[in-house]
Length: 346
Image (cartoon, rainbow, N blue to C red):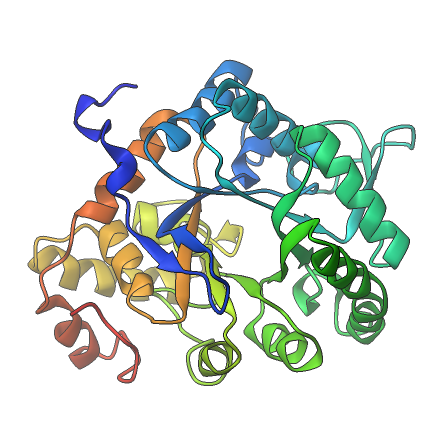
């Protein structure tokens, strides 16, 4: 481990995971970048990144078959075998089945990864097959959380969303509900990019956990008005991904900064510059403000962040410890940069 000051990582706070008896560490490790999302990663470094997270006390590991078409799960599995005593919460997803013998084609958005074709399958059998594949890649015999993945307009388009929603509730949800009843998984979840779909699923089924990416952040809070109160009402533990909106809240308004997986448009760059200016005036890093803001909402159990090297994981733990001064938040609201009703750190 490169930073000796972070070796006592067991002090990462834990938070109640909705109505479950389980608690999750306030920050979790997200496996999307380990699938060679934006760059081809060195295998040893990728595995070391995960073991660093475990060594620092991060107790939630989230991944998906989508991430590198199985490569992320494979690398996380290697790390778990190197740290058999760690026992983190393991979270993966269903909704896609990998087909090793089918024709691989680009278009997944991943620069690298396994050359296994991905096929959407939200059926009962498809969910069971997907989960079996994930267990083999990870080398585990059970899961703490399994999310139904990407049932949103962003992924499927408005013309397909009704069909996908029905498939997911009639198939994948039924499979996960049975596995939960049998004790094979602890929690049924949903992982999407749209708060409105979280609300719809929350009203349609009995979900323990939901992972929402990008829709509650320092930059934007569309989930605040209706979904987050609903999650609290139903006791749904909320995991947040994409709290840097694909990068711009981590890098700042730098040339080529990403927003929603693409180059940030001018209006987003302009707002981030204003956020940066207020943070700088208070001696706060933008990334630190972004993390502590989202953790202030009582519905949030954990913030899941990706990393591609051990140093990035170490920086995230430092960020958790870098508590911004309380006078930052009123200034951001006064400048119209935060919703007035948004909870902020005490």
